[in-house]
Length: 238
Image 1 (spheres, rainbow, N blue to C red):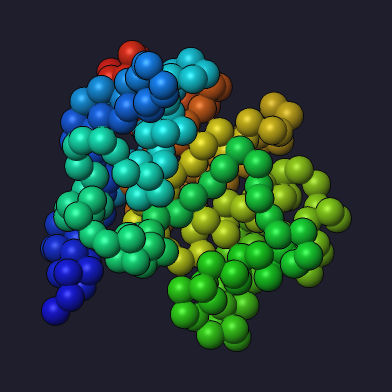
Image 2 (cartoon, rainbow, N blue to C red):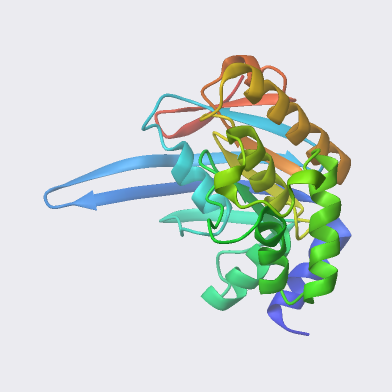
């Protein structure tokens, strides 16, 4: 059994969840260094939706990048579904990221030359799913957010809310156990943001995912199960 298969087996025994232990991240420049994260620790269980708040520049995006295995910390550990991840090779981290982690960003980052359904198919096909099966799954996901009639439209023909709903279901296309979202409604007007956020909450709870959602919107943060505040590089509850 490979190290990655062993990790997946541990995850299946311990259930879904994300844990960061004493994560430290330092950005070094000539003659100085900035310690963005200092012993940042938290746990999010499967089915739990947690808000990550803090002022601009506090390190929220850096924390999400580390939690999503896109960036390595200077110290500490990231556990996904009960297993430590930072000693995995880059290739193993990439494979695990595709299997276990979904991402949603403030800007949708849809590929403009592809339709909505093709954008949702893309992560599945990269993970090895056949085209026909990926299309069926993508259409089903788009239906859950009311976008079946818009499935064959390219992003330029979709409204802002429709683009972001497409980006959300794209992030869920591979049935991740972890969802990381960075200001997922930050570019939307308040009414659209409220509707899109409600659909995101429903999809996360229905899928039993552990979700961390960075936001500046305290009204949205209060609708989540818990609030984690990033202050001076450390995580504070509430």
